[in-house]
Length: 464
Ligand SMILES: Nc1ncnc2c1ncn2[C@@H]1O[C@H](COP(=O)(O)OP(=O)(O)OP(=O)(O)O)[C@@H](O)[C@H]1O
Image (cartoon, rainbow, N blue to C red):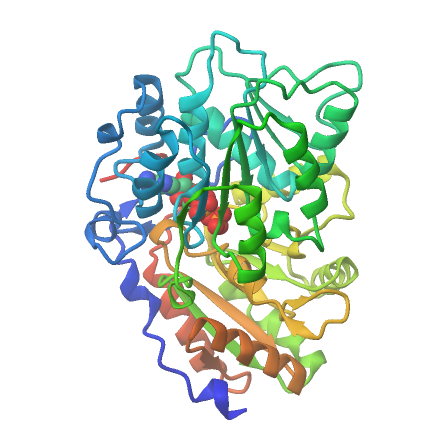
């Protein structure tokens, strides 16, 4: 297994985020419980470094957004825009409205970029008339985005933000929000049952657009939504990844769009130290996972596995071995899923086992470690590595300048080859961890995680 091992040159991620000032997350988001644990980064340095995706030359005020929106940004403690916010916002809020296809690394503030556009377009003299629709691939992400809109929009009088996710709107009520955030299946059902009037829609945002427009997945549903909204609706497509085969379709979905794209080598986040563990066999993967438990609970951790069944199975085994873990996947009831994620956000649970359902978009700033217990593979045949999902999974850590560790487990030729291919796609050098030299493994992981200087109590929204 020489290929991966010979590429051990990634500089310690610690260098990317020298601890100093706490960074605001989506704190105080209504409906979302916030963590009392957080890590610190020197954001001011990153935002002045022009090579960083967090940098900008301008302030939010220079964008000319209405005062209530600027007040919301202040309340979030967003001092300066990130690069994607600085570049995309002027193009999106201008008139006449133009479509946008925007790509930026995970955790760099794409949500606020489209949320500010949505808020600048809605006419709140008609607060119950749906005017903006945001589509997301999971209920968890839809709820999170709803919370961000409510927080940034907290000074926008009469703003109503509704979630259109399974179980959120009963059959005898209509959608009564100026902004609606939902999952495609539920949104289509609501439109078909005439509970959701889309005739006055100004903006349609598709978050995680490459995933959403993929014809193997929710592409058909998103297409239907597109045909149901007015032709003049401004279309905004956002993601950290846009593989070529989806990009061609995206350009048809959002014609004449302004485009902000990244090169393949720019996609990884510098603050994430990407490591891998070469395990002797499948059984040892579990043993190594348990040994890592102490390191996982320095901050919070997410363990990604391939199937719901293995998620449940690993939870059972870990609990029997005395470890406290929780599990969230698509087989759980909606209300349970909400409660499980709220517990994880608040730090009540610190190790979350999940499937790809949480691979995209979820923003929990205390996550300092991501484990790929199974390497992500595409489709049913499991033949091809899923490089996009890998990037989104590891992007659950290292949010907005923070540092974090990802550890991918390999144990046979197939998993090893898959990880090698993923590393080649992004031209990344993975750091090898040895299951036989535990002292060194602990040191390598701790060096990164401890450099993020975990604080026991979170000081909400205060930037030094
Ligand atoms: N200008 C800003 N200043 C400070 N913090 C910010 C700013 N913009 C966004 N953030 C914070 O950065 C974090 C990551 O933002 P966000 O969730 O929008 O990332 P993203 O680019 O959508 O990531 P992903 O690709 O994983 O969906 C959030 O906690 C958000 O509150």
